[in-house]
Every structure is written in structure tokens, then in C-alpha cells.
Image 1 (cartoon, rainbow, N blue to C red):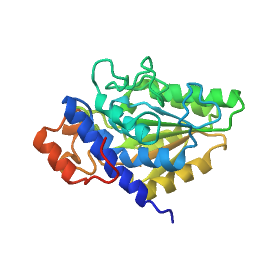
Image 2: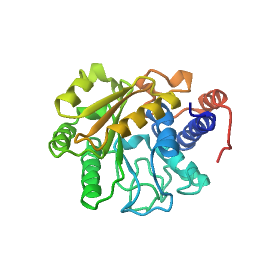
Image 3: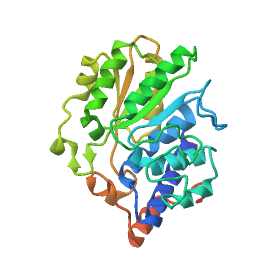
Image 4: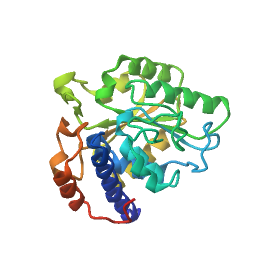
Length: 281
């Protein structure tokens, strides 16, 4: 069994980063960021083979693409705490001329970010293109991507999903954050997605499910199982069942915190539920 205590400490610290970043500028998306904290920590610290000596081409390493770019706070925090850029740069989140814009962008040259994202529905296409490039270059590393469940309501995804299977893109692991919430309410109320496992399988993908998507050990086990399915002629989808706002009780299980910043009192409550572990920025 993997000792995940150091990862759990980082998860708590990343939650603190998310809360403080969004609060400072009274703007941002804490709910989905908190829900995916365990995933990002596990991915960058245990699963991916990546290089903090950043290059845009990413030759000789695994690559990650964030499609649901509004959850940039968790992305920036984990990148900084993995060594891509100074941790104290998190203080600049969403400020004018900052490299840490509300949605990740590329013209500011932020290490770790290879695409501008947040125009939902596009990340799947980009990830597939990157996976094909790896194959054409004889690079055996993998492509990872993350998508929101509400994001799959965008039709472009399904064209890309069909394309990936038809072209046997088997060096791609696309994870879907299944928290059941989107900006206007529950996904089942806005536009039900039905049985996503059956849908992806019908489109020719291998599908794995991680039922405890806010459990580091379960994520590591599930993602290692996903890696074992690569190279078999099919793209791989991981359905990650998470809780929106996880780790901050008043933000959990509701779409209300999709894109809303905590006030001063709420910040203190959230931070008290996540005591400092390895140092604030």
C-alpha cells in the first residue's frame, strides 16, 4: 500500500491555496477546483512522468491538458507546488498582466500550460491531436486530459471521441470529473448525460470508474489501472466521481459555488477546516 500521507498534506494545502486565491480577487471557481484537488495532486505527484524544466513540445514526457479551464486555481496551485513556477506567484491570480489568468492562457508563457482552455468542449480534440503527435514522433509517453461532466454537453466532444476510437488513439487517458453540477444547476436538471460509461463504450473506448474520486489512494490505484489499459488499440476514459467543493462543508454538493468567491468570514471557516500543513504562499 502506498504511503499517501505526504500527498494528503499537499491536498489540504492546495485547498487553502484555492480558497485564498479566489477570495483575494473576489473572483474565480472554487467548487470544481476543490472537487479535483485529490486528482491533480495524485496525477502530478504519482502518476505522470513530467518535467518541470518546461518546453512547449513536451518531447520525452507525459502531457496534461485541462479542458475545463475554469478550475484554474487547483491547476495553478499544483503546478507551483510541483516546481513549475514560484509558489508566491499564486498571489497574482486574476490580476492584470498576471501569468495566472482566470482561464489558463499561453501568451503569458506560464510553465506547465500548453493550451489556452476554458472555451468548453475543445480539450478533447487538443488531447487527441497531442496523442497522435506522440505516436508520429515515436514518443511512447502518454497524454492525460480532464473534462467536466457538464462540458460533455458540447457536441464537439463526441466528434472527437468518435475520431479517437476510429484512429485507435491508445496513448490517451481522458478523465471526466463527475460531480453532477454545472453553473446553472445539477447536470441532470440542465441536460442529463445519461449513462456515460455506456456512451463511451459504444463509441469504442475502454472505460474505468473511480468511485471515490476524492480519495488519493483510490485515484492512484484507478489511474495506474488506466495506464495498464493503454497501448491496446483503444483510447481510455476514466469516470472520476467527485464532490463539488470537497473539503469545505458549506461548498459541498451544490452548484452555488461553481463560480463564487467566499467572503472574509467564509474564508476563515474554510481555512479552519483545512489547517495549514506545508506552508501558505
